[in-house]
Image (cartoon, one colour):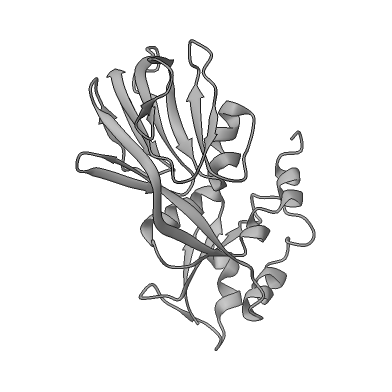
Length: 241
């Protein structure tokens, strides 16, 4: 199998791939081993879309449960072809010629931290409420619902896509919508900035600009996501949750 090793502290995992079972290459790999945390997986999918990923936590900085604290055990599952396959839904934001994709979330934030933005939200073409005033709004996948979406809404979801509103001056209900929903956000007072996952590809927006966010057909194929997202491991990293 041809594998590419991406992330930090690659030397920690390199010995597990120095065998006849693997060929380390960055040219047309069959699988990308992503060593690090959530951000490493987001970056690898952005840089190498369409190639399956196997995300592995960096045990130097991420406490792991006894079942997953051994690289030998984790990579042994790969060698034995016993990793579970998953497909993560992806969403895209389009505004004019600008387009960006994400597997976690896409958000519009106030560019000036001391000034709120004003915007209107259209769900499948229908205006949701009235003009909203706040720090911003965004759309999350199920995968991303445990990240920024959770910090805003104090909730997660298991199906659909989430629409969250950050620090709105009026009560605005967060929504979980069918995954094929089209969401359009029109800025009525800016400036604002659109961000997707941890991508450096951002878009500054001014009053009158609009962006449409929706699910795309492309997915992020992963192996061992259940290990990477293990609840027991997470409790060790976040004991107060």
